[in-house]
Length: 437
Ligand SMILES: Cc1ncc(COP(=O)(O)O)c(C=O)c1O
Image 1 (cartoon, rainbow, N blue to C red):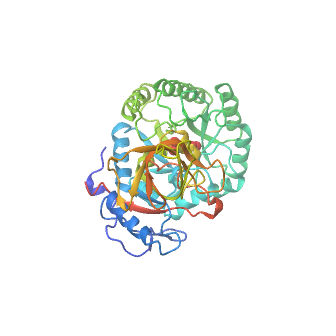
Image 2 (image 1 turned 90 degrees about the horizontal axis):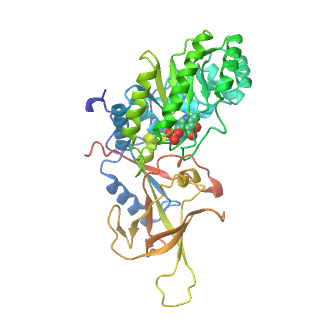
Image 3 (image 1 turned 180 degrees about the horizontal axis):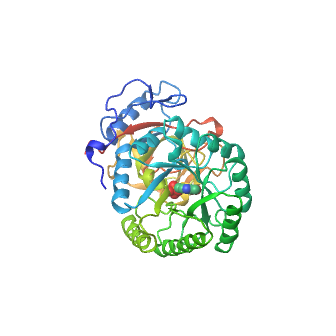
């Protein structure tokens, strides 16, 4: 069912001062309510104007532009393509408070893997019943925290975890995570998480003996898996586990298909999200009756395309060439973000990095075609770590310190990164382009 425009969460248009938002049963969380009125380009221009003043410490830092309107478009796409599957937003993917709140308003629930993530969600006034604790090997204090706050739904894949859950959270509702073929994924998780099918029966028997409530199955075909047969096999195996559980006296009614296979941006030569979703839906309906609830833990699908990282060139080195007049020599650019910041290896692994010119000679080039010649270059990150290189081999026009570059589709696994070398997390400018269309 599509959400009508009147149901779109109302976000303030005009910049106002920072005020507490969402009444919470705990401490109110202070969130800046500023959502930029114009489009992405206008927001960037304003920010660059400020950066050019360069008066305050960090005014010329790397910054993010986050489009909440794009988040909404992704949600519409999900609802259209996977109407049976309830999305749980994987907070680890991008823990930005505005994203969490926006998605909560759209009706998403939340996949958390640590106590602090659960607390963050609950501090926004979101009910604990909307949290899924999706780690199969849980830290004891986090598990206690979950029990104390009535976060009940969680996963397991081994015997020790069952005993731990019995001791610390005996009223939990459990999903058994099974291993499935993740060989078609860009980033598989099967070597770390999941129980083999041969272990299922003994795990369920032990759960029964411990009087634990196991309510369903979870599987993960791996990140970036757009192979329909991987889902087909995983769903068939899940069906088998549902049947096994029934024979052992369990009443399974929840299936978690994970969902980290959905990249959020279709890739050339691979099935689109729409095609993948159509296949999954068909298989689901053929194997599971409508009374079985289906959920997915998904982060990247929602956020990847929402965020643009803008960083400044802070230095340039020209590599010596044999011919002094050779303009085609290599350049090394140093920027104020890097692998320990927004350009996490996990993101680069997915091969989405495409650096473009944002401002050159004080002219904003956002989404403009650059007509000048480009030269081979490498782009290096801001820390002193020698491996901190965004790309060793790309082409950019001739740039110099003070110019800016940008990368789009950077909304997943970027903002959660470290403060290595004292660098601060970039500030975010929020835009809502859905309303400006
Ligand atoms: C348990 C769990 N759920 C969900 C996700 C979300 O993955 P993605 O952001 O690729 O959708 C991850 C990612 O690692 C995960 O580990």
